[in-house]
Figure 1 (spheres, rainbow, N blue to C red):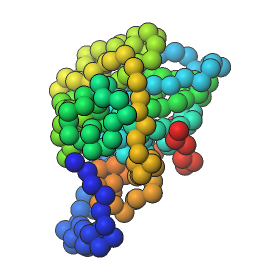
Figure 2 (cartoon, helix red, strand yellow; figure 1 turned 45 degrees about the vertical axis):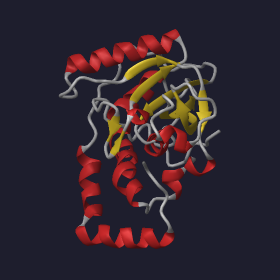
Figure 3 (tube, helix red, strand yellow; figure 1 turned 90 degrees about the vertical axis):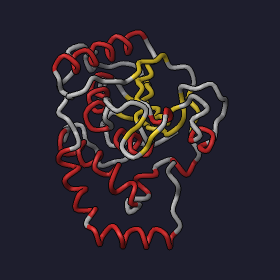
Length: 233
């Protein structure tokens, strides 16, 4: 379970990290942790259309939110909880692993700027590792499972086709375990979880696990990257 750190604890942790050179390892992670996923063969053409939304889960929502907040065409990216049966869950509830919810991010986007298929490409290449079952990096539990919650049959068709494409192309050495699930309900997370990565760049967890994801987005998809941070609901 991730916890916020006190100021004193953070100073001690940062000193220890600097001493062992962990921040140097971040550079290596930014270079090697992502995969070059191909463009989807099945996708909607980018065209004028109404604003759309989708929900992704793939480990800690801090990193997923941070990535999509830097994608051009994303209007908002909001951390929250989805996929379970408990109404209005708290972070502590979800962290227990007994609510069925996964830490998730609701992405509202403009299809005239970025397609759903492009969002999938980002999700499967730099936002998380879709071959890890019920975990992501240091975080373990069903609340960290990989899920693409689709909000239309069109999205379902696109994500099913893309997962099949990635498996057949052997982009990953292991099969993709991402669940494809119809969207039902999204519960917005507590205020302190919103923009967490952007507002806490020196937090060791963010520096090691999440900042490299944004670095990879900038490096691998410069045409998609936006310095301006998308809002959250």
